Length: 248
Image (tube, rainbow, N blue to C red):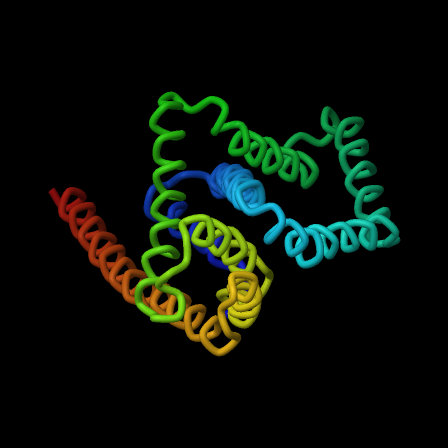
């Protein structure tokens, strides 16, 4: 319903079910998305390197240039400067007043910020770094096969190479990361334009994008509904066990 709200609700669910502080969870979400961004850039760089003449100009025109222009636009925005000034003033005020009003609003804000930073640092302090790296790479390899295997579902895309699969994975990921509900529209346009580089007609490119996006969305809805049911049943069982123990 709201773009990227799933990141917040995920933290809320884990906070209620696992009793982990919300700010710590949200910090881990930011850390995870940072790692995903690195993998996305790595996939795009790999595809552009393998097919530089074909993909390089597309990446520059459709991705790098718009992002660069947006950054320059934000840098010139007075709202950004006001936001930075407000944060600096807030932390300065807290620093000088923290000893006078312990437990006040500024202390609470600072504690939330510290928890958020702890969540960000959780990736660096993770105990099993090897497993974390392995599963990160494994997830993205599966993302690749998710895009590449669907090439063979359509005659028009069945002859595309693995390099095309890596490229579609990357630009599809950018489309899904856009601040639009579920990537609807943005994903389809980027994937359609990306496939056009490999000689795929616009109608076939849109068919492929719709096939992949719809299958992902349906699967997410089904698993989401099942997960909600399981969490509900588990919470009811926990309440029952707790009430039973109290009565004893």
